[in-house]
Amino acid sequence: MGHLITRRDIDRLAVPAIISGIAEPIISLVDMAFVGRLGTADLAAVGIASSFFLLVVWVLAQTRSAVLAVVARHFGEDRLDAIRGLVPLAVWMNFGLGLVFFLITNALAGPIFSLYNAQGEVLQKAIAYYHVRSLGHPMVLATFALTGAFRGIQNLRWNMWLSVTGALVNLLLNPILIFGWGPLPAMGIRGSALASLIAQVVMFVAAIVILERRTPFHILPDRWSHPEIPALLLLSGNLFARTIALNVCYYLGNRFATGYGEAYIGAHSIAMNIWLFSAFFIDGYAAAGSVLAGRLNGAGDRRQLYLVSWQVVRRSIWIGVGLAVLYTLLYSPIGQVFTADLEVQRLFTAVFWMVIITQPLNAVAFAFDGIFKGLGEGALLRNVLILATALVFVPVILIGHQLGGLLFAVWSAFLAWMAARSMALAVSFQRRYRPATGGRRR
Image (tube, rainbow, N blue to C red; front, top):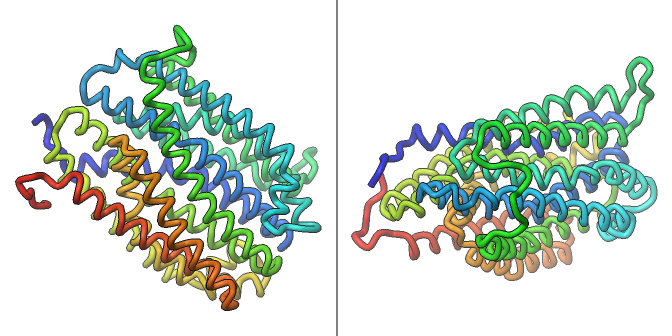
């Protein structure tokens, strides 16, 4: 049976994962908080461009979950030597993938942001920001593969320190590069993008140092092939298809909001970045679920897998409720942190309650996402998300738009979508993993 996993064990993994998981959205929130002082057009531009950057990263970074599942399974089986050459291959695969998408999206930034209904000054500033920020794609994706390996060997503290370092570098450089300091000229939104890029370079280099000094893996592979590559690519492919469906929702939300006007996309960008921050925050327990599910699956301990998974879900729900309470208490001041534009603040506060309601639902969906990723159930995650997007999100946002719901229509779609995802994943887990003896939850 092995070591009985307790709530303290889950928390020990989840807390560092929470801190590390929020680094990228914190970088984007810091960018928006500083850029919002430049004007509404700058805020809208960075909101569109940084959201697109995060969405590309989400699509392509699914290799991290695949690496985590493979490494955690071999860790549970006590066979890490068998995948010593797989981790560096995954890192360089991600780096190459990031390079390809940097070249494509950088060249097509204008048409891409035009699809979001951005035009005029907002479009030009979004392109300028993204041209700099997109240089980070190769390093961000490679870092994700590295941190997936760290998670797989049950060490999430390294990820936490990497993320804290990146967030601090970004926080320090943002005001200096945006507004200028001493001999450094003011660079505006390009300075904000450059601060984010430098932070990502620092995190990548630090992750390589940790890999070489503290793990059995190395950054350069002995050979450029491995028997686990097909399974890794299959799982990554299923998660990739799943995340394409995810991006359809974010794209439609941004497209409709931008079409309603500059103030609307400004308000939606604030709401969406807070939503993404919350998602990454809640994802800390999902990361713990991934790590433990992969390990227990490798060890063949199905009963403890079931019990621990539900513990992870319950802890995630409490985190979601806590965030909802915090946001309720700070309901009015939050918008003022990001913009001085009264119209943007008004539109934001009109829909922020919907962002708050999604938090416990997000907790259930993200917790089971993590658990199923750790179990290598990429096909199930793909199918649930595609169906929820096609049958729930798209109809709700289109009907709401036709009825003149504006941002209310957009966030109604997100609310219904998360409810469908959480319910489908919970039911699927019960059917697949509830012990035959009818094991009761603790």
